[in-house]
Amino acid sequence: MLKILTGFAACCRAFDLRVSTSEVLDTARHLALVDPLDPREFKLAVRANFAKSRRDQSRFDYLFDLFFHGIRTDSDDALSPGIDRITQGLRKTLSDDPMEQALVDFLDNDPLAFIDQIHALHTMEERPQKIFKSNMGQLSSKLGVMLQINSIKSKIMALLDQGDHGEPDNAGALREHFRERLDRAFALATEEPREHNDALKEKPRATNEKNQLKDKPFSNLTPLEVIEMRAVIERLVKKLKDQVGRRFAVKNRGVIDIKKTLRNSGKFQGVPLNIAFKNKPPRKSSIVALCDVSGSVWSGARFMLTLLYSLQECFARVKSFVFVADLVDITGLFQDLDINDAIEKALGDDTINRNAPTDYGNSFQQFKHDHMNVLNQKTTLIILGDGRSNYLNPQATILGEMREHCRRIIWLTPEQINTWTTGDSEIASYKTHCHEVRTCMNLNHLTEFIEELVL
Image 1: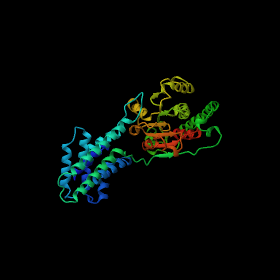
Image 2: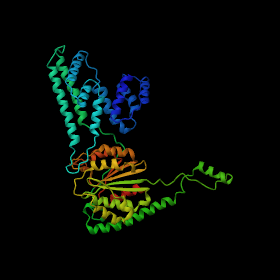
Image 3: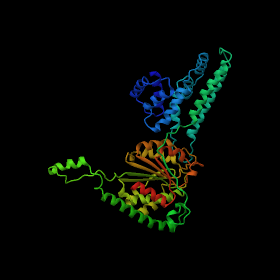
Image 4: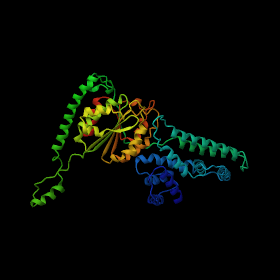
């Protein structure tokens, strides 16, 4: 049993599940307390030790079903000689390609190498491309695996047509056995398992048909209305600052902290002159904003950045990045210039090619390599964009890595929920790594979000 558990633990590690040696030993001890022949009890005992969080459970369930039900199903003893003969015959025809060798190991009940190769394929990063952009790197690698699976299948069929299989019905049974295994390998190569994200908050907003300025979509604002909107934002900022000021002004109210009050009374011979309270204002969080500035999305980014920097004293730190195809740090502009001037300069910055096709994957990749250090457990990462990446590689796994480094990720999109899965939208891929996804189309939506963020 311990040998099987260590083999399964190795597969879990290859799939980025953190499983320590002590957890494997704990699992072995726990299995002595349950009936290991009961599938439900066995799975619960292993999952309790191997899956650290709800998000890990989806990958654990995927690997568990593959390892214990997909490839470790005990074959009929009558088929074992035929299976061994086929796998040995395949090994004689193998090239030096590690994927081919991993495929044959997979057929021979050793999935570790193949799982490792497939996971590396799913999480591979596209190389930066300046002229002609595509996601053909990952797609061509997947196509190569599919071709190798078909090649292995042809070799198996040729070997099955040769030699003695024992009983007359064994040839058909062997064909079915290897077909099921190759189908499993094909599914592993083409299907990417997604983590559970039960805590995700989705806040779609109905389209408002009112003519009021606050209800009008950002993309429909005229230049005159943009100027009027600035006055509205100034009043909003003043209101929010007043609310934050009142919150700090009443910090010495609430439930009395008995322990701290008694400790303070020691200075005054036991008289509680200095009363301490438990209710304290929450700590200021730092904000990192990634804003898509292509097309109509930029109008929403303009007003969000205006609000964030107008309320900068309400946060510990605010850092801003804009992107279309490449990521640009514009934090310094807001330190040297007025908010509106900084936004106009960022809009006209030559380093931002607004005519390039939007590439979220490349922008996330640049953030990972150059700016990941700005994220910490007090950081709220805000991403404003429609998630439309022109069918380029979304590289959603990088967003998952960013989630591990920050407190929470909030995605604001200017589109309604019924468009999140249409065309080149990758919101469905990204939202598995977000804590909250909400529609933000006008100033009312943005105001509601900022109030929740600040207060």
